[in-house]
Length: 98
Image 1 (cartoon, helix red, strand yellow):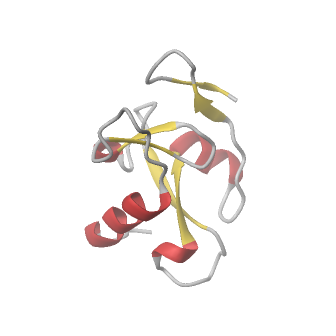
Image 2: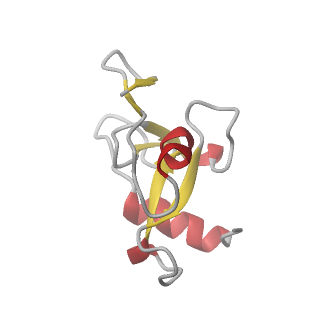
């Protein structure tokens, strides 16, 4: 499903985790702790690519019912389910298997 740019931005701002020493307009973490990069939305060729997932499938298309997931976490879980396949590496901005 294609989300509007305004909704993508709202979900980015409201549903991803800010990391104190990083630019929140560029870098954040998903709920699994994986790094995501704002301009890599929808990019499955990037380890920092991310998707928007419904918390409750069939529920409203609004930030309260949506979440940011690094794309491999999104694919691993399926709609409405989170499987944390990827998380952040402790050595900087890179991801590793959970």
